[in-house]
Length: 356
Image 1 (cartoon, one colour):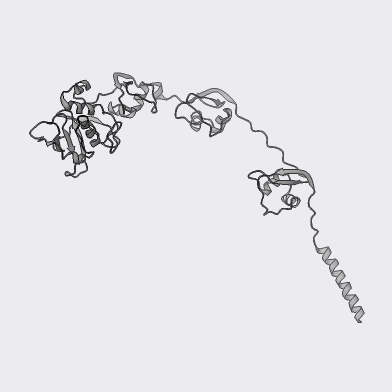
Image 2 (cartoon, one colour; image 1 turned 120 degrees about the vertical axis):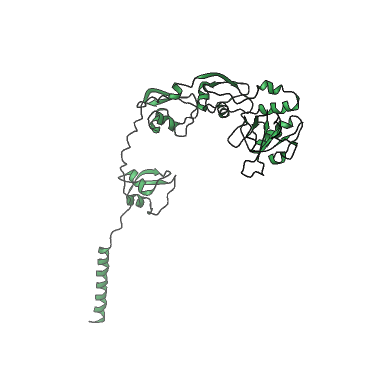
């Protein structure tokens, strides 16, 4: 084969190869034509989801907008909707529940979920018939419509038959609180609330009179308040002060006016007559004159000391005698200032007299 023939043969083979490659190569899909419609990206959108929304395939949406599956879209972006888009039909409008004839008057402490549960309806239905959201604020005495399938609230047996009242009353003093008053008279707090038409959050003010439920027991007393206050001399002032603190809650290292611990109570009582005590029971036990309790009676105003932590040599508690057999003391956390019988002599650590 001559040189000219070889050149012509090579050119022919090349042309055939190029033709073959052209036939084998896949045609590049032309971008889908745009309709001119525009989709504005909103929060939570993603490309596949948008394609489904506008009724096109994901590759069509990507090609029309020169995007890839890894492209980032943000709220506010505008995407061209390809031709042939057929958005899915809108979801049918939600059927709102109908309100029934029942209404619910909101009481203190109630919340939307508890009201729905009380009337055996879903929270969503309760919100819908009142045009509320789960974060809506409701207030006592506000009336809420109830869905048609609501049931009346069950009757509270305690509310239907409140505890009967007794002839006894309690005049509220500064620092009094409802649970403390109930405990003082050995009655249940719900019964005290019921006979006075109160709730656990009701405000009580000094001077107000509370009716006590049946079964109330007067606190142990050695005399009336008037007798104590009228007692002559400085000791009468000390004991009268202690008496007026009855029912106030115990709180560590406080000395009034609303709460006391044991040495805080005795310190505040003796401050009424100008005697300054240290706010510490063991230190108070070093003051005054020792009383021989085996050979002489305890008197009103005497400080009575005890070891309550198991070590007989460690004084940890103190109270004030109001007579030979009773004392006023602030016992412990969770308790209140109370009048009680003096413990047996064998349990007492010491007794001190500050005023002869």
